[in-house]
Length: 149
Image 1: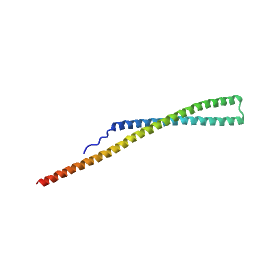
Image 2: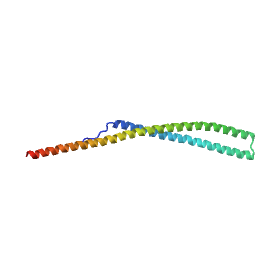
Image 3: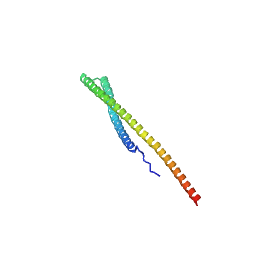
Image 4: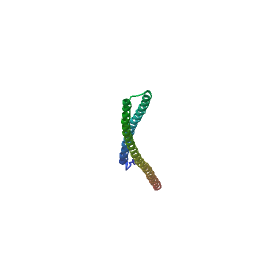
C-alpha cells in the first residue's frame, strides 16, 4: 500500500502559520483596545467625581479662584477625554481589521483542510480499487495454475 502525500501540504502549513500570526495580532489588538478603553473609562470616572466634588464645594461656598481652577481642570480633562476617545476608536478599528483578517485566514486554512480530506478519501478509494484489481489478478493466476495441473 502506498503512503498518502497531500500535494498542497506545504501551502497548508504556510496558511496555518499565517492564521497563527493573525490570531496573535488579533489578541494583541484586543489587549491594546482594552487598555485604551480602560484608560478612557478611568478618565470619565475622574471627571464625574471631580464634577460631583465641585458641586459639593459650590454648596458650601467656594472662592472664585477655586471655581476657575476646577473649571480649567475640567476643560483640560475634556480635551484629554476627546483624545482618548479618538484612540479608542482607532484601536477598535484596528481590532476589527485584525478580526476580519483572522476570519479570512481561518477560512483559507479550513478550505485547504477540506481539500486534503477529500483528496485523502479519493486516495483511499483508489488504493482499495487497486487492491481489488490485484486480488482479482491473483485469484485468476491461482485458478489457471489449478487448471494447468
